[in-house]
Amino acid sequence: MNKFKYFFILLITATALISCNKDDDDKVETVPLRDYQEQYLKDNDSILKYLKTNYIEEVTADFDVKITKIPAGGTQKSIFDQTQYPLLTRKVYNDNIYYTVYYLVLNEGVGEAPCNYDNIYTSYVGTLLDGTVFDTSNNFGRSFSLDGLGSNGVFVDGWKEIFPKFKSGKANPVNADGTITYSNFGAGMMFLPSGLAYYGGGSGAIKSYTPIAFSFKLFDIQRLDHDGDGIFDINEDINGDGYVYDFRNKELYANPPAELIDDTDGDGLANFIDIDDDGDGYTTYLEITKPTAEVGGTFGPSKYYPFEAFVVVDDPATPNTNEALNSEPKGIPAFLSVGTDPVTGKPINVYDYTTSGRLKIHLDKDHNTTKVSTVTAKK
Ligand SMILES: [Ca+2]
Ligand SMILES: [Ca+2]
Ligand SMILES: [Ca+2]
Ligand SMILES: [Ca+2]
Image (cartoon, rainbow, N blue to C red; front, side):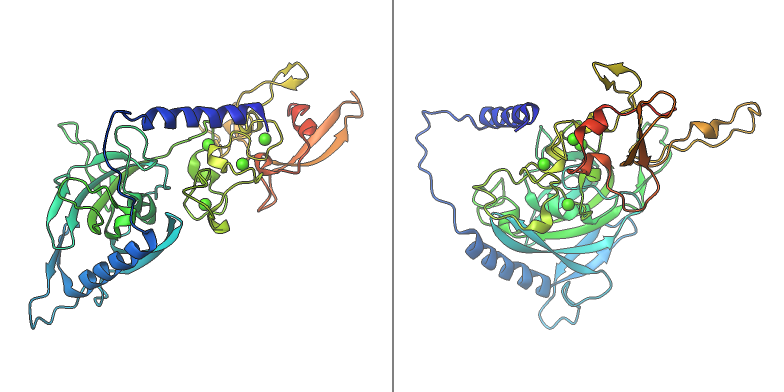
């Protein structure tokens, strides 16, 4: 195993140990948690009952939603039966079981969807299934870290699974008082079994093992780069499902499904937390940087292969300069072939910028390290 990779794991473990440090003198009797599968089936029954006995009384133009119990003899169509707003489900792997989570789409949103490790800016109302509001942001946006880290870290796993199904809104011009409003943001409701909420812990008005619901408005998102390799988490989601997962804890994730794993070199460290995605001993960060000067037989970093398109158009105001020449092709090129410069006799590497579906170089676990480290600077 590469040293830096090992170091990264150690760092994470140390952090986890610190945050789990409990007072040894605590004489609290621990009650074993209920079986997740059994509890999920119970919760799912409660949620289905809720969806079939409540209706959407109102959705305002600002996507405030009012849910009301269908009165005796009432003819209102239940949340479950109505067709105006899509009631969708997502299959979620968590606690070593599979959950089916119901969520209601009031508005999809026009911006970008967060991945399950991004930061979000959202307003929300949390209710019990009897309609009791246990928490609300009063329509103000609040920032949360879906990765669960930091003071804004989200503990409700359901949020991590459902918010990526919605998109952010469009930021309106800044108001005179400095505030920003959003329009056409993603808005919906999620109905969470306790296993994807507070489970045995409870919180405030929420008793242990209580399924809960949230209505929410996703105003904005912030992309994060958890391994600091210069590539956002969302771009390390290799299978493109919008989710990345850290399954290193074998107790929590004994048998993660293959379709949730984004791990190029198969070392158990998902790409978004692996600083060497292809496991060639050469960091992704260096693989996406421009070798400008030779240092110790390799070339030093500065941006060379922009991950996203870097396109400059010719500016008509400067007729003697063609800015378009500064454009670089989109994406990190795959290594294509090696030739030899007939004049200098030095190797010339050729990169493939054009083939669609080509493997980006930092994801190619079969490519030869020495070819990368002795790359000849592009003329
Ligand atoms: Ca990254
Ligand atoms: Ca994925
Ligand atoms: Ca890996
Ligand atoms: Ca690498």
